[in-house]
Length: 129
Image (cartoon, rainbow, N blue to C red; front, top):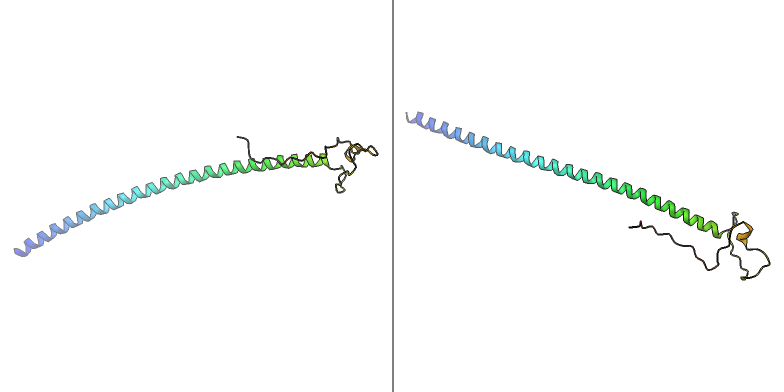
C-alpha cells in the first residue's frame, strides 16, 4: 500500500512537472513568435527606408548629371565665343586696343569680340533652393 501511494504521488508530481514544462514551452514559443514578428516588421521597415534612399539617390544622380551637362554646355559655349572657329590652338590677339591694322580674329569668323579683361564664369553646381 505504501508503495502504491508513493507511486500515485510520484505520478501526480510527474504530471504537474509535465504541465509546468508544457506551459513554460508555450511561453517560450509565444515569446519567440513575438520576437520573430518584430524582426520581420523592423526588417520590412528598414527595407522600405533603403528603397526610398535608393530612389532619392537616383533622383539626385539624375539631377547632378543634368546640372553637369548644362554646365558643360555653358562652358563650351563660352569657350566657343572666345576662341577662333577653326581647330588651330587659340592665340590671344596681342595687338594694342585701337590698332585697326587688321580686324580682330573673332570678327574674321563672324563673332563679336570679347573684351580682353572679361573672364569666363565658373558655373555654380549647387541646385537653387
